[in-house]
Length: 126
Image (cartoon, rainbow, N blue to C red; front, side, top):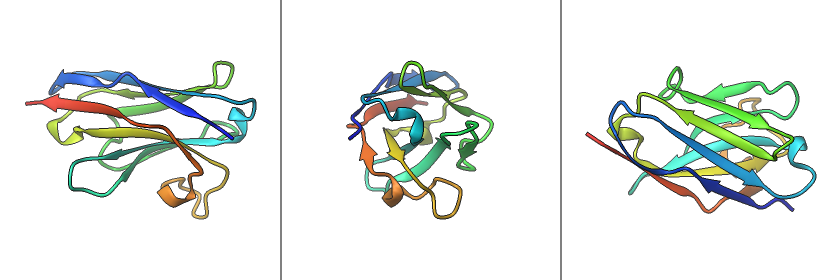
């Protein structure tokens, strides 16, 4: 069982930065790939970024590549999402999630994630 708690969301102007954190409980954190997803009002949940469990390979949605960076600190059981050059279209509730496998190697399928946090709101004003 893994429990996830996100933090770091808030209101920021376009062009600004935020860093999201996701703290995980349990001793098996390092065995999980970790992902960030987001959901805007009226839209489906979409993949943002993921990091694997060994070697820390990273994966990004096209819309955030070059602006967002995912990282993990296994000693602290924490995964981060550094978001730079934020745009109003980044406004959403951001969720972190934990997965043990990826059928396509991209860790971008929400239904393959077993554990989810409660989400943190990110609002980017224009």
